[in-house]
Image (cartoon, rainbow, N blue to C red):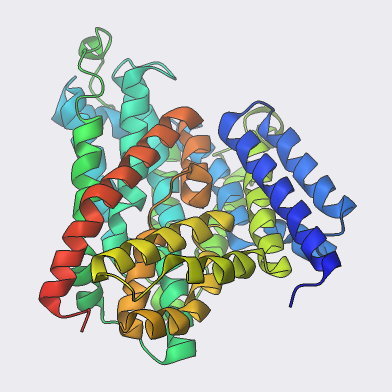
Length: 435
């Protein structure tokens, strides 16, 4: 039972979290100001121990973003991103549609190779930004927004059809294995999650392929790409080594964050000849790092105070599970999972959702495996970009406007709710998952 003092802390925590997320979404204040205000507010109300409030600075996600900013800068200042962009331009010409389609397929294909979205974002976003510049699209133009958003979204959301491609699903099924001794196979997971993710990918293409119909006049006069310089070849070797480590993390067990941080450390060595000694002072904006640390702080404090559990306990009885059709129950579990994943973040949501599976299964009569799959539908549907940390990194690396990414996330969420969930229901009924 929640005491009066605990209820007061919960109310204040929810108010601070809601205000901070609203300010992040609208950017009424600079991100670093909102982040610092969030930390101070949590400290003032004694919402959690300092180690919890500042836990974002010790998380792998924070250091992946930090390293990603450095790697992205190296790809940019060495001209490697432009070299890739020119080579892509040779295949696509000044056709925005061809370029956007190639980026979408590249993002989706990387999901098969690299088992974490953040490293994939770190690799692809500087290339997408360079490609938009190469094609003559200025920062903030429709062409720039279209190409970079297409690459970012395709690298994350449709790859939820691949069990090993995203950290939230790895955490989610790790929790289910611990609590319920179940673990789906790679093939079975793909088959069951394919409909919703096919909808995401197709709707993304429908939204973004016609996004910038005008061709740029500057692209047609670009020179052919030159051979890679010595510095660019060194950077290519380092990037290739990092990708290899990311792809084989199942075997060596080294976190993607520490691989990225090692790469960043090497790049920052002045004698290595890739980045100069003043790059941290002159070329790298650390505001996104404070942003993601604050988002992780909101998640950690919500989990520490039990905010997510309290909300879940109050919502589950209201949902009326087991009192209607399986489709109604699927929408209920999808909606609850979506809401709770926004009270935390996608990687943190399984800590709240997995323990609820037993109660939901008792109400619906579904198997624990079906509950796990239904919860993934909600975890993988961000209404707001902050729910998915890789999208925060994408915004920082490719200079994507928040409002543009927000609109695409909302459209895709509507598509999943209107098309993805019903199609998934009929598919799962065919597979016998509701028996």
